[in-house]
Image (tube, rainbow, N blue to C red; front, side, top):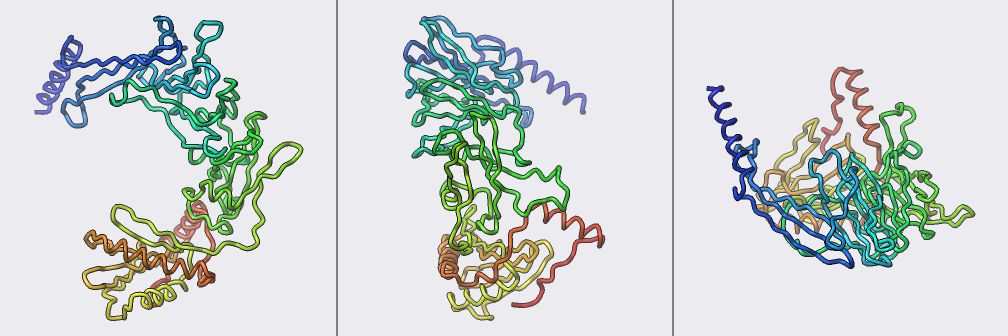
Length: 445
């Protein structure tokens, strides 16, 4: 039986291979020309049927390849355009409207400038690489600060095939995280091409520039501490830092901070408003230098309200066990709930203590995970979706945040512990006891 199936599969693939190589075998070709200055950008979309081994069926696939012509002649690109993608052509072509004369950026994993010099086309490498997707990000397009981070992928549809994408709005373009292109002068500054860490912080983590210095020489990246090469006793309390890199001098430094003092719970919160609130540039003989702001007082803690897939929840972190009775009393005061509305109070070492309340047809959970210093108020995990849940949880979240903004309940917050320290401490406890240390969160609030 197995042999029969194998033979059938080989036969099917052979038939497909022959049919796909034959002319007019369901393969479509669309070609569009776009004029930009002295250049013609030709977009060629090829639709074909291919055998999908995962599903055992024929599937449609569209590939879009670009070529650039000058005076009707094809402009050749270096072999380094790509070496391991299996797609040996230009994935994307972008115009640079703010350049002094018609200029293009084109490539795949490696990106190149295309322009005319003394009437002849020039293809100049911006950055050649073969290990990652290329990317572009203006460093100064949003009031002098970085704009959106864009990765370069091959197109797989024919939408707007006759339109040329433009990179516009800034002067300094960060290319593939390791080069800065001055759009006006076409000068290129490559930096940290070996992707070295700075003071044991890898960067960018996540991708993209966070800020740009006033002197236009320093890029601020988010950095992550490399714990793999660090002994337990040398681990920092905070594994996040800002890496400031001078792309002209090809050197950088780290600006460390206390995540607890800055009330930073997630790298997602490290946006530009957060940066402006806690950091500032200082003028020096060597140029702009970044430092922490000196705040008059530490900001108050606050909760985080989110909705994921119709599941609303409000999180307080990092909190001590003493926050649970305080929060329960607050919710009871806001809702009028009593002990009669508490329909379940259970504990599990993995989920923590979960108190479930019923309010009419709605059910809510208050979850306390002491080991993770997390208290959460949410829709009951098994309750059916209902928009009333979001309204209700948001109302409690806003009300409790209003109290926190007045400085109330701050004594029930703890300190942020790095993930690496938590993992290593848990491993030590497990190794010393032979099992996970049980939580002490069974007591009733």
